[in-house]
Length: 355
Image (cartoon, rainbow, N blue to C red; front, top):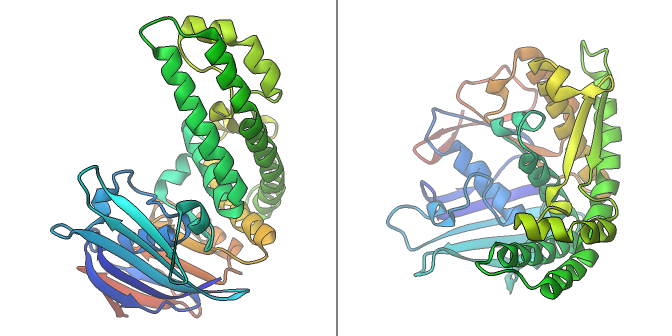
């Protein structure tokens, strides 16, 4: 997949931009707060429909503007695809609309038309951070790969929120209604569990191979899917009384996790910071390889100032590991060592110039 054109209007600090990315590696250099991360955020939104930096979508609209627009063209195996995402201010908050090849579509039909793998400094906490980070990681990848996954996730999340509201109510919750919610959770919940298990199996195999190739790594890295309830129906039934007593949802894939191990021991407890970071790098390479294998088309790789967080050996190892990318976008405050064939651009005050 190649992004061949990107147009922005009143997005973040960009009043207007018309940019033609190059194939291969595109490097964007400049001081902080000039628009480097904003550019990658816009590209990611053409694939995911969401910001990877904020949940307040009104922040995406340039100060003083009523709406923002991101448009792009990409070459995919089937031909050229035109994508557009618009964000408009409104009395109830920001509202998004999406177009594919000039036709307005809903979010579910927009998601995954283009695919990205995003790597930001916060991702380096995937091993040691909380489980919500790891769920967001595999949810983001699977939603781009499989439209059905997003629909199951949206349906399951809605039911869980309704059930949680019932349990938190001021009066004793209706047990029959709780059981009805549990029954509704089964189909989408089981679909999520199956999809995650299959994806993590592929991801773990790829990450193990990548980590083993890394310079100076003699230990074995393992990644495992940890479902909160492998047998969802039985677990829900067994926890009805506990959920009623504790007034919270205790069971389901909204509590799933990933486990990282090094030579059979938990990586977060027994691994050095260097080993944890190398494991995250291997995970990101594995995500890229797994998405490419599943889709039959390479995703776009977005690297937002992440190399500044790594030592030279790990940064070089990561770039070498994903060296077969079709197209990548990298932001940095300092001009990196020469990359063969890289297109270099300087960003100053939301203006892009070749350098």
